[in-house]
Amino acid sequence: MKVLIIGAGGREHALAYKMAQSTEVDAVFVAPGNAGTALESKVSNVDINPFDFMALARFAKNERISLTVVGPETPLADGLVDFFVSQDLPCFGPCKAAAQLEASKVFSKEFMTRCNIPTAKYQNFKEIQAAKAYVREQGTPIVIKASGLAGGKGVVVAQTEEEAFTTIENFLNHATLGLAGSEIVIEEFLEGEEASFIVMSDGQHVVPLASSQDHKARDDGDRGPNTGGMGAYSPAPVVTPTLHDEIMKRVIQPVIDEMRNMGHPYIGFLYAGIMITNDQKINVLEFNCRLGDPEAQPLLMRLKSDLYVHCKAALAGNLDTQTFIWDPRPALGVVMAMEEYPAHSKTEELITLPQSISEDCKIFHAGTVQTDQGIITHGGRILCVTALGNDIKDAQQRVYAVVKQVHWDHCHYRTDIGYRAIM
Ligand code: AMP
Ligand code: GLY
Image (tube, rainbow, N blue to C red; front, side, top):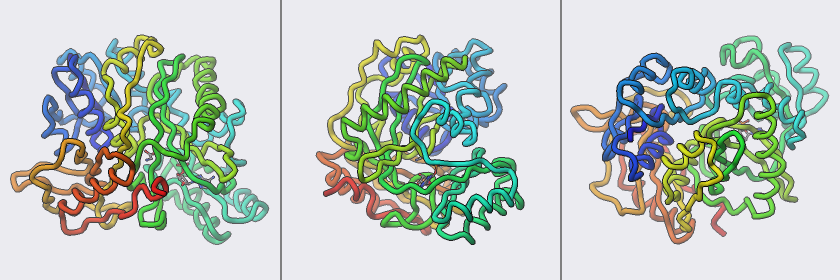
């Protein structure tokens, strides 16, 4: 069987690596992939843009691809799955209507309100004066969110009224995020610890993946600007068995049921970002219609059962027949990024990688390109070094031992990934 993975990041490298382990899979293609996917056994890159739906479908037909998995949110929100399904091509991921849960925060907040899913108090705005009046009334800190997809740049936790007003003006007036910021959600600031709760669904049945947690702030101590994620680990001790049941009952099941009622069953990975307060109250911060990046890297290193078989069963509506087997050992991943990240950078620098690393450790690539000179950086998040360990601390030590052997000139990484899970 042949598998096609859409995307080019660390999550897609982890998906390709995991699919290649399936005894049912002979070849995995990644469109467009990165230097890491190109080096993986059974895996090759195909130079097709994830937004060129026609070219992707043509490739899938010609190669008789038996499963396509879409990694990133934008092609999902643009309807790649709908297009593949219309061509009778098996494709795992939510349809365009279901992907709105991530693509429109206005849709997602209204959906949560309708289904009584716990979430921060909020209002939507298209108009600056009304938005400012709401901030004045509610006080700070307060959270301003662009409704549309903004690649991790759409959320600002404003500490002062001035910062809130500047953000409102930037989004609504100066269109710094383009159309994505033409409508905003202003919501109550919540305090607590965040967890990533990711499940797989076939539209009716749901299987929760192992719990995980990422670090969104760029710098040590969870300081600095918000990013796509600087590191992650699984399991997340903050998700106790009681909270796990509560999240399934009050968050996940209502989403799956309501999507089915609305006529577009949710098939794919569903990610709920949950804020857990000190007194164990839960609130949904966001939904993503895909696996998290970098959560996917430690999660898929822990998954021992066959992801290809699980995805095919989900497409057949038989997810309830599947048993997911997890390595009991925790896994942890540290993202190595460009110094400028999350600001844009196109600097190309030669990467030095260790000659060999142990079996329980894996270097997942993201922004890398293979050239005649060697592997070079291609901006943003570059690598995610991931390891299994006897406990989180052991996994952390294994990862940082490898991180120290990786080099390029302007590299940035956090030195404290996993600290919340290490007592
Ligand atoms: P989102 O894309 O909505 O998850 O927001 C990105 C990040 O902003 C989250 O992971 C949180 O760290 C932070 N955030 C979002 N909403 C809130 C909120 N209501 N209160 C506090 N922090 C938030
Ligand atoms: N790591 C957070 C995300 O994938 O959105």
